[in-house]
Image (cartoon, rainbow, N blue to C red; front, side):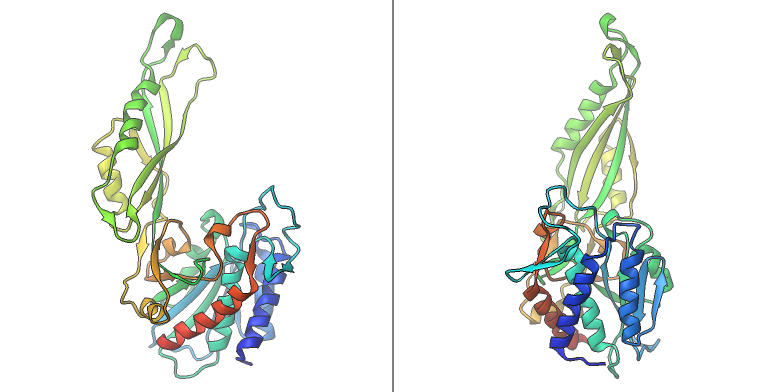
Length: 356
């Protein structure tokens, strides 16, 4: 296997073009999984299918060594309706590779695969390497990295490929969606009967609007709560509603657990509070962790990311880092610069050379 950097870069770009040309909506990633598995086969690298996830392990794997996971996703959302280009036709214009999933997170994925290929047959590494191209990231589904991890050897840390302009996202906000229910008593609006559940809910909504959490993160700032949906089951205008449901979107910094946030909420509101899920927790990795320290040595800056990723589902330290720009994700005519992929592969290899 050739480890020539230029060859790896060109192969990564061709792989990304193939992935763009192959629809891979969340839960429908079989064909892109097949493309990645076929690449491994051409390199004579054993690859394992775990659902629509593809996993490969470095040739000189040793159980006594710690293991680094290289992970990114190959699923996409459906294309933005404002696309002017064919989202499934990879086109290069003025150094930009256009296509659905090019920036989020195809560029990251092919760069990490190229990095894995570079180190695949290296002997005497300090760490094992595993690459996992996973599914369902865009919908936070159960069939992606969360489904894959139990099939892997023990993982000590990870690099999660998401577009960060190759800077170091060392912390990430958690996302918890909460359903709240306020109760009243049904009645006829014309006769001023009943107890309006909407009015009851308004007191709690005002609390959510104004509450400020005490602990403010240096990386992520304050935790935030936003009421985003309110509804009743009423179909008639003249019925005072007995139940009012509203939804609270909470974005939690790394200084609070979800359980602490729920406890604070319940102590201050009268409505019933029911978290939908506590899976997408806030995460952080220490600034002195070898992966972060290596990035800082390369002149990379670190920051707290406002967006969630598969990093939230990993029960071990993980660094979010990859080529591309998060601001381009899910936009019409999505693109990534060819140069970003080339530099991304080079920087990943430089970073791991300090660790491995």
